[in-house]
Each structure stands twice: as structure tokens, then as C-alpha cells.
View (spheres, one colour):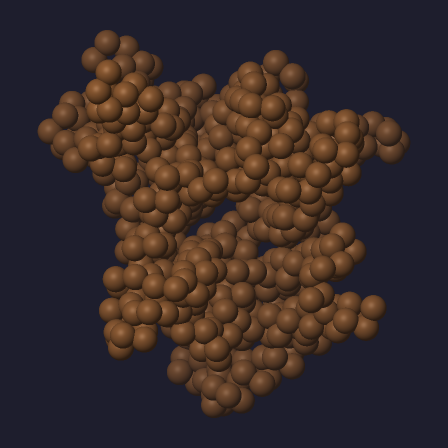
Length: 316
Length: 324
């Protein structure tokens, strides 16, 4: 047996996965994340291809009020005789766009404040964190209702509000991570070499906190979608955008319950639940992978190791 | 001990300042609203003189800093203005629904705490087993369901078979029969079951997941290894070492969420038509009753801040290290 063969016999796993990108290895090691990602890809495709694959338009009356699920309309009709399946497909795009952009606003604002606060420290840090503390205790749903009812009903407002509510979580989390990275030797060396703050942040700090930011972004999208359905349910959603949240609201508002028309409420809620769950599966798996403290349990014999070892896949 | 009192003092100061900030934010938010109170009065035929009179009455003709000072003073004395709809003082109008919400929220939260904590601990203890996987997946599932949708599903599929009422807080005809306090209490509880169950189920998922990961973090610590080396039983390790330490973040979370669910109950109360603070706010939104909204927002914010403060105090009792 040549040394090469011997090495491959001893560490077959690494030989197999060495050339694969880290994302692939992460999904392979966490089936939960893989399922979540697969579900999201399907829904993303539906959102992108929506207008072409939906059998009817989002405002097209095609049958009786609260028509029961039957052959041409597998999910039935809503209170205006609109095909629920088509509404669901059209709504996917709006719901996902609100989710992603809302989370993006939160991440950009929270991330910037977190990095500045953690990197520079001192008085600036103190000031920014106090502001964050104040925002953190505001009851999000109520703040949202107040702002939405004052600013008016539009998708843009909803996105801004979602960002406004969630940037604080992001800022605190990233700040604490940046504080740790800042103390590392290579950052000190880069400073000694005369690198500018911007360069250090972009080249040395950001890559280290990026995985965590990504994991949190994924979780935040789930929260944003959740909030969108809540705002819509309270009648503060965009009247021109048939999102899933608006579908639930519509069903409830037009007393689908007393009609016994479960098909007006169950499908959009289920769609929201599946998408949120997919995001949560992906996000929590990523979070777990990034937290080496969860790797070891001293109660279980097979997890017995001397110290929590940072996972190589996760550190990437 | 002195360090401890300075810690409590700092937290109290923080809570006070936060309340002040919330009051100010409230002021700013409602000044940003399109139009002023005269347009909110919705009288098309009002003359300019009448509008000016109303402005003077509300103090809107003064400078903004002056208005702010007056507003802070009024708020501090508990005067939150009058509701546009009922013309009654806001604080009194808010108090009644809050009294309805509190027992319902407490019932749901107790359910969630007892079940979520137990399942979270068991799940971390038996990590990787069927029990663990079932509870993680059910936790994830419940955590992912939109609150209002879960409530609607309970109405569709649970209310009928269980014979529970799905709307309002009490049977309106029962009062005429004058049946005594026991049937009335039972009636109230029956109306509370479904809303409380919704809150309980939503929170249960979250509590289970958080307890589990917090326990898992603790179980990886070196002192657990030491405890094991000393020959303690698994039960002793979990109870005395792991749970004691992992309880800290959980307690904070529970107190924080207690403050938040008062506001979060808005979705549930809307579905069940339960006359609590949430439904009141919902109605204020549809009526554009700004004084009520303003008051409700302030009340809920203050309750979150107070809960936060309580969590800090409890933290101080549970973990003497926080003062450092």
C-alpha cells in the first residue's frame, strides 16, 4: 500500500470532500439545512416564474364565491371567486420580496452599526449601544402598528418598518463578534503595518463575522415574513399586493369561517409556515454549526472529548 | 452587597431613561403623522376659526419644545388625553381591556413555560434520541406557524369537537340568568381556553428550542465534566449544575416575552374577538383613534421595560456574578 493509498484509507471523508465548496459540505453534514434549502429553492422558483405558471390572474373572477375545491380549481375560490392556487403563486413573489428586503434593511443597518460600534469601541460604542438598548425594548408589533397606521399602507413602508424593528438584534450580535475579532493578533499586525480602518474592517473583520451575519439574515427573513403576515392581518398591508398575509386576512375578514371555507385560509397559512420553517431549519443549523460550544455534551459517552473543538466546516 | 445595590440602581436608572425615551419617541412618531389633530377630527365643514380654536385647545399653536414639555408633564401625571371615539380619558379606557388580557396571557404563558422547559431539558439530556428529535421538530414547527393562522386553525378544527366558544369573553345571555359566580367563572375560563392555548403553543415552540440549546451549551462546560468525575448521577448533574446555569438566559427570555406578548396578543384577540388590549388597539387603528394608539403604545412599552427591569433583578438573585 502506497503512502497515498494509506492516507486515503485512513481519511476517506476528507479526500472525498476536499475539493467541494464549504456550503456544499455544510448542507451535506446537516440534512436539516439541506431540506430547508431545497424547499426554499422550490419556492424561489415559484416566485420567479409566478406569472407564467399561475393558471389565472390575481384579480380574475373565474367562478362562484367561495367555490369548493374541484377539478379546475384544486384549492377552491375565495370570496371574490378568484382561484386560490393562482393567488398563492402570485403571492409567493410579494411575500418573499418583503421577507428578503426587510431582512436586508435590518442587516445593513444593524450590521453597519454593529461593526462600527464593535470595531471603534469607546464612547461611540457606548452611545450606539444605548440607542440600541432603547430600540430593543420597544414592543415590535405595537410599534409597527403605530408606524404603519401613521405612514399609510404600502409595501415600501412595511419593508422599512421591518428593518426598523429588527436592526437592533443584528447590531448587538455583530458588535459582540467584532469585539472578539478585533483583539486577534492578525488585526493588530495589520494595524501595525498601517492599514486603514476601512481596509481592516473589509479585509480582516468582515470575512470573520460574515458566516454569522448570513445565518442571522436567514433567520431574519423568517421573522420578516412573519411580521408581514401580521401587519397584513391587522389590515395595514398594501391593498394592491396580494401577499399570503393578505390572503389570510381576506379569508378571515370575509368570514370564510362561517362559510366553512377552510380553503381560503389553510393554504396561504400553510405556505407561510413551510417557508418560515425552511428558513428556520437552515438558519438554526447554520447557527449550531457556528457555535462550537454546542458540539460537546459531557452527559453522553459518545460525545466525550476533552474540550469543545471548533468545527472545521463551521469555521469557514 | 454594595456592588449589588449599585447594579440595581443602574438598572433602575436605565429603565427610567428608557421610559423617557419611549415617551419622547411617542411624541415624535405622532407629530410625523400626516395632518394634525384638527384633520383627525374629520370635520369637513369646520371654519378656520374653529380649527384655530381647537389647535389652541390642544396647544398646537405653541412651539415644538414647549409642546413637548407640556406633553411630558401631562403624561407623567397620567393624563394621556381623551379617546376620539368615546371621549373618555385614555388611561381608564385602556385599563379595562388590559384587565381582560392579563389572565389569558398568564394562562398561556404558564402552559408554555411548564411544557417548554420540561421538554427542552429532557431533549438536551437525551440529545440525539427520538425524544430529542420529536421535540425539536415540533418546536420548530410551532415556532414557524403564523400566530393568527394557528388561532384560525383552532377555531376550524378544535372549537367544534371540544365544544368551546370561539368569540368574546363571556356568554352575553348568562348574566341575565344570574347563575352565581361559579358558572360565570367556568364560562369565562371556557372563553379563555382557545386564545390562551394559541399563546401557549406559539411560545412553547420557542421556549423548548431555547431551553434545549441553552442546556446543551451548559452541558459542554468543564464543570459538568468535573461533576461527572466526582461521580454525581446524571440527574444531579442536570439539576444542580446544568439547569442552574442555563436557567439564566431562559428567565430573561421569559420575562422579556411576558412584556412583548401583551402586545403580541393583538393578533390572537383579533381572531377570537376577545376584548383585551390587543383588540382595543386594533379597533383604534381602524378608527384612527390616535390618542388611544399613543396611550396603548406607551402602556405596552412601559410594561416591556418593567418586565425587563424585573428580569434584571431576578438575574441578580440567580447569578451574583452579573454585578461585576
